[in-house]
Length: 398
Image (tube, rainbow, N blue to C red; front, side, top):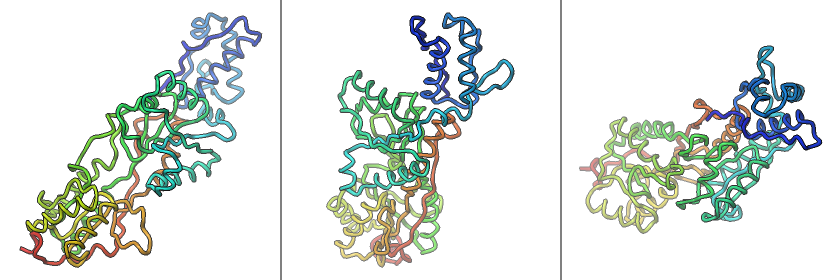
């Protein structure tokens, strides 16, 4: 969203010992530093600003000259001044800070070895390469007063050049999160989710790249039917109270469209929903087996769900991949010991790119062209995907 300097908010104190032109230069400098401006943003004329502030034109002229000398302004024509492309960089402190908004205590993230840590590693490395410091930040309590929240946000704006959101607290309403996301003076980027605020950019994985690779490999292995296993109740869900939608909420629907495009049998009787844990997954798959509604391959919306499926199939006396192949999505635990075929999500690259995008907003402003960045996923083939076997459990064996 394009922003402009708020000249009407400038106030000069004629009783102050500091010359008016230096007061004005300081006010303009602060606004340039705190506002997400496009480079080459045109300054209003000396005459208009002098009339607006009730000062003589010489005061404005001298203030503009100060900013010209500092390289914050540049002269487009003899009468036109613009924000310099280097202004944002010049106003950054020697060791600038960015904030990483995390949904829980940092110690909890480390103990859980969560996916969030993989994003954070990319952010920190990207920041370190640019001599930028990172600060882990937790938002105030959900029910904090608006006055408390505004003070918190004002402090962020003073200390940081921008923030990166990693998910949310999944509570609605979340006053601090909503208030912060609406705050346009601080550049903001969200990871792996689509925010509903136009001033917040996003970096997500593109599931289709890995999805197409999987569909081709499934066909090459002779599979004709595929079932999707989801911990949610449908292929697509909304969430987070209208603040944003996680990329994972629409992942299954996107992969379904790809599988259909490859003419794989994606009949609804093969799909499994609400597989939130092993017991739920076992109950659902037991019913599918009894009814003869097992496909030759299952794709699961994440690796955790895929491992539940493998354990449940084993409990039911089926072998993976001899009887049924299983594929996951995440790739967070890809090691030489890991046997799961999966679509690998580029956690580190997403975090790394999020920092670069945030700096782009800080220096040049957010535009329609740089509002959303997608990073390709990739297929990692391991032992749980093999050639299809004709069996008595699904359509291919009938």
